[in-house]
Image (cartoon, rainbow, N blue to C red; front, side, top):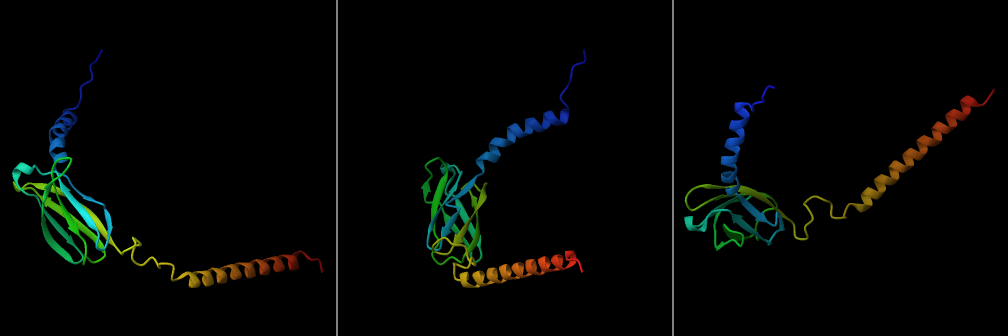
Length: 160
C-alpha cells in the first residue's frame, strides 16, 4: 500500500498561514457606525497595544486629511477616539491607524450622509409628479400599441 504525502508547498503554506494569521489578526482598525449623518459621531478603534503609546488615526476623504489621536483604551482591547463629523463633506472617508510603536494597524472606511440618512441624489420624493407622468405616457404608449396590433390581426383574418 502506497502512502500519500502532503506536497511540500501545501505544508509550507499551512505553516506560514498558522504563523502569520495571528499577526494579521492583530492589525485591525474599525469605525462604528460605518455610516453617519453630517454632525454625527463615529468611534475609531484600533487593535494597538495601549502600552506602546497612543494610536494615530489618519482620516482622509473628499475634504479631509487630518490626524486624530486616540483618547481612551477600547472596551475590547486596543485604543479608540471619537470623531465629530460636523463640517464634513458628504462622501466616503478612509481611516488608517498607526500604533505608538510605529506599526501599521490597518484601515477602515465610513460614509458621511445628509442629515436624515438619505443618500445624496435620491430625489427625496420631489420628483414624484414627473415619475407619475412618465409612467402614464409609457402605459398609454403600450395600450396604443396593443390596440394597433389587435386591429391588424383582425384585418388579416377577416375574409374578403
